[in-house]
Length: 131
Image (tube, rainbow, N blue to C red; front, side, top):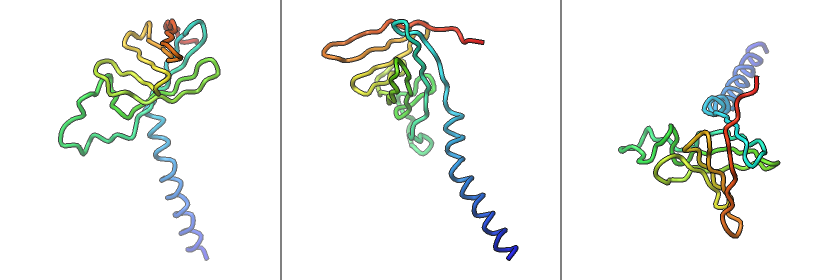
């Protein structure tokens, strides 16, 4: 009976390890930054994508600022929660879902735009972290 319980506990620990490991790794690969865009707080959390470049014979041609195509950002602004994938555009990383577009080539004044008939640009400025 004791061996069966021990075996069950070992199995449960293995399942917990398999389930939790990707979550811990994903959390370790994120950073969050904040800005004011048109007067409202905007937060951007970067996320690592599912692209594994370690097995490729050549390097991925567009690795900028530690990001690769397949990475993304989670943006919170004015009650919206948006998940934008990284584009494969050259230069500073940019993220879009076709309607919303984000790029922080200049971290003090990132670009935040929306396609709504035309292009609407929002004025963004860096905020200082609150203590």
